[in-house]
Amino acid sequence: MKTKEEFIMFLTSLLQDYRQNGATWENRTLEDFLDAMLAWTTDSDGYYANIDAEPSSEPDWQRFADILRAATVYE
Figure 1 (cartoon, rainbow, N blue to C red):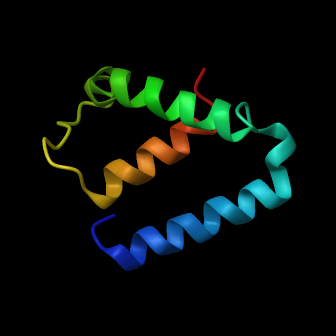
Figure 2: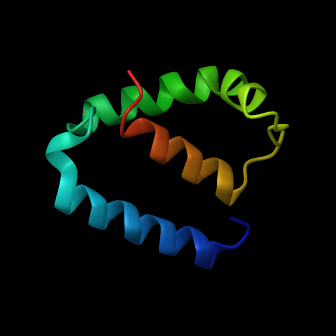
Figure 3: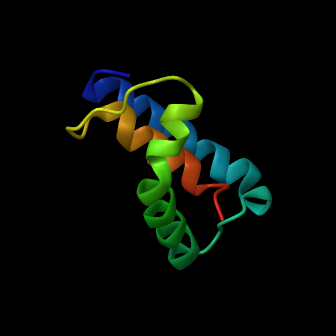
């Protein structure tokens, strides 16, 4: 994901998934979701190492998408 438009499409899809499957998300409240975002972002270097990818030192659209996607399930 490299563009703002791709990120917007991702957010649209994520919102649709929440509307259809929100009850299955691990973190359903805003507080839990934000807590998971913080935890995953703190631990994200391990995720990127596990998939043999180098995390960008600068924020990018893909990184934002990874954080949001992970917050749906990360404990």
